[in-house]
Image 1: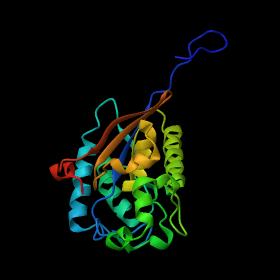
Image 2 (image 1 turned 90 degrees about the vertical axis):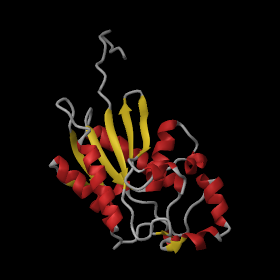
Image 3 (image 1 turned 180 degrees about the vertical axis):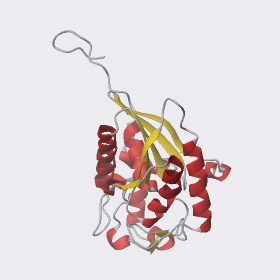
Length: 223
């Protein structure tokens, strides 16, 4: 604990616990790169996943600690995932632009099969820190945006518990940063639909408490 100029110990700010939730399954999950395209909604399976995640998050609360806020990226699939979570906590969903999916530019809507045939695909898998989507965002920019967003949540909710519903790659790059892992290795981190990833943000930096926590044992099998 740091000392002030008078020699007194400065009281540390309690860490803010951010529970990152990937949105539920949609019709394009595992098939396309939807990016920031609008009009994409949760599938029936995705809606059930969101309800299950809501029940798990509600159970995190006790007499000493409550979830005080639920944030979501502005896309439909994240807002629909956040809705049952917020309902179970009796709070409103707050829209946070910083939680958006990476801007895929000209690749938006491309099928995964077509993307894998592009010469840039190897770069995305091996050296994503050097890649920018044509007409879109780079992975470095996405990571900087996510880190700044988490710091904003920490500043706005010191010592509180908040939920942030986002997308797979933004959550993965945020985890990589928190772990001190190079961005080029973020593809090794698995974040399944409606999984919970918890990061405590304190004065001494982030602490990763869990990654890809889910009740579905199929999440243990890489997709």
